[in-house]
Length: 53
Image (tube, rainbow, N blue to C red; front, side, top):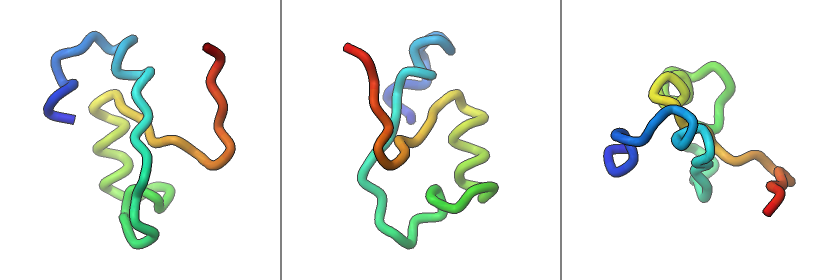
């Protein structure tokens, strides 16, 4: 997040973080870690999520 924090909100919203260990709190809906990530304008990828190129 530090690397991308200076990007405009529209660009941050395009970023999806991937490859989390199954015990990572980011994978728990409503967790403080996920709320912080989203408050900073980022997202995590979800299973079978697709993106048009």
